[in-house]
Length: 120
Length: 106
Image (cartoon, rainbow over all chains, first blue to last red; front, side, top):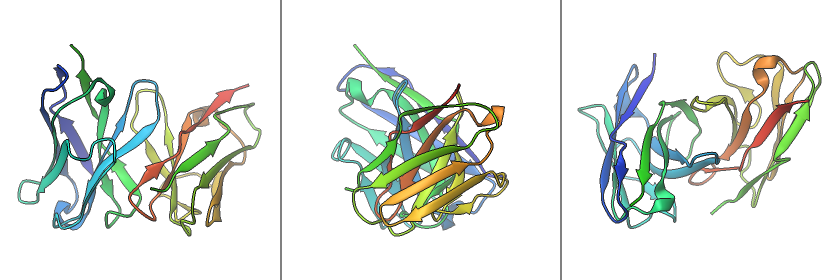
């Protein structure tokens, strides 16, 4: 059974940094692209970033480009999101999601999310 | 960036009735479109991919159709557990989601 467990969410002040992690199990992590998707309170889903299996293809939403960095460690079955220069509008539940195949694909498994609150 | 728009924002339907949800892409995405269901406090769940292929374990009352820029998710006979928010997502490029349609109990 696929399991994705996010961690690292916290309350931080604007301008500070945070690193999210996603621990994957139940599938061959190294074979699939992975994504981060966020959901602000009471709002819809927003794709944040994606990375292919070998970290050779990486993409970001315009809203986070230049501030967030996605990475993965296939040996540790882990996905990461380094978040810098955080803004109040980054407040959201951040989901880790597995792609069915490459980065330009649908998301067939999701974690339960980790909440990031950005406020002074 | 491909913009995805869903309509209506809210749809009020009675149990047993049919629900039709629409999704439009700002440019052709071929059939690279998926639908997800999200219930309160839960992560999204994949329902349909490739515009019309049901994901594993999804009941036959859920059906997807469309191509290029116009897509539809139909729930043929609503059950109580179907009242939720539904999102479409294109994956012809970097993913983007529609704003969602909330299915409400009439």
